[in-house]
Amino acid sequence: MQLFNSFEVVSADLRRVRITEDSKATQIQSRFSFIDYQELRMFQISYIPGPLQSLGYIRGIFRADIFSLLEQSNAEQDMATAIDERVRQGQKLRDSSKQFDFIIHENAFRSRICSREQMIEQIESIKAFSNQPNIRVSILPFRLNYLVLDVEPPQVSFDVFDSKLLILQGNVSAINVWHEELITGYKQYFEKLKAIAISNESLLPELDRITSELE
Image (cartoon, rainbow, N blue to C red; front, top):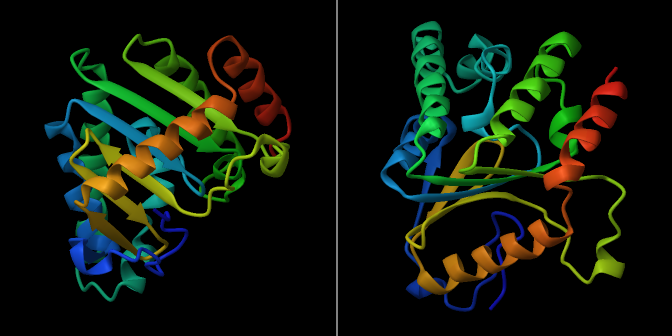
């Protein structure tokens, strides 16, 4: 089985895969349904995972001009709604009955989403969340040599909800996949990434390094 490395579907089993593609605006709302799942795995290349986002970072993500690009006439109202929903999403992390596993590529910390001060606040928030027993945070630093580690370099962000749903994310759209084999494949790939990522007692020093290098 091949993984989806982009929005080109490369699986030979395409006809058996149930896929829907939503606009980013629709995805913003639909992805909050993660609260219906007991275990959430999230890997992000370009952004801090939604549930971990601080308020300053959220506001940067949902600027009015983003919605304007999507040609929505009520951009400001949609932005306010999206911010409120994302804040509530983060609050669900305090539900100790659920397990959350996040892998964040270092690139996500370098994206110009918010000011340096807001990014430092974001990093401090991640540190606090990482102390919760039901939350694991790992970092994939730029310095990893995937060839030596024998792991395929990640090219797309994705979420896995239990063993029921896989969401592959792009800049302007998302693909929802319910195909059991592909979900299993991405869960296995997630574990491979986690095995080479920085976490546990090494997480805080890695976040401090990233903070010190912010421009």
